[in-house]
Figure (tube, one colour):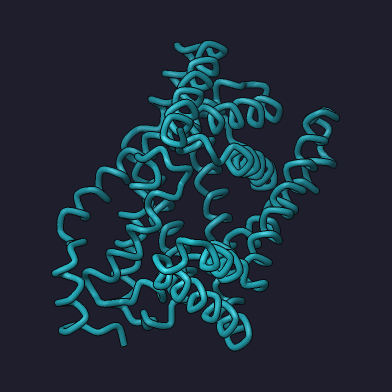
Length: 338
């Protein structure tokens, strides 16, 4: 049933994309997209590479098993590329690549799954709280902008409230050791004997959360800072794309547009890769600020083209790395994480 629902959401995203394109002047859209050119796409890819770097560093900082050395920075960068590629190509609400990231570290460099699993959750937490800060700034600017109507402003505030609630709940699940609590409750059932290892793993990961939050405040602050840089680089990317398609905007206006896009993508997280919803957010945001909705769709399509190029490169890189149990054993023996 769950798998069926995933494909329903995928088809919903495709349908939304179709609606957006039907509302757009396709000839004007093509003119705008083609105006980006090879040099413009190269600039977009460079900015996106920096975006990926900031996010990879935000994760690596909360993974003590991966020292901040050039070799490990490159490893985490590649692992994140591969994991995010699978997040985008599988209908799993941006979660399909997370186990792949953990297993790549285990299979190739012997990083224990519990360490990488805990670090991925902590990095997601700093990312969510930095997104709250990023979106809050955008919503404040949006509320003061005359081009957005009352309905848009109300939706933006509601979306911000949703993101704040999600971030707080996600953090409390770690601090209150809820995974251990659920595992123990399941352990008391008639299936308890079969869940002994799962219970132990849940308790161990919860203990890692507790220790990390108590002992590594500086690492958390740096992880938050790099996660924030990640969102800001997203603004820089849209700033360049809008200029390339022929409708430049101020940095503050682009911040509001990216704020709307991230709000929509977060609320509609169940739609793979934000298909259709991202395009709709760009259409509305850019349309409100420039009066040319097609420029927003053009911006979204340039981002989609960048995604396709990056995913293709990531999948090529994936072919050079192993995810087999035998490789994990060899990695642990010959290249230990420390």
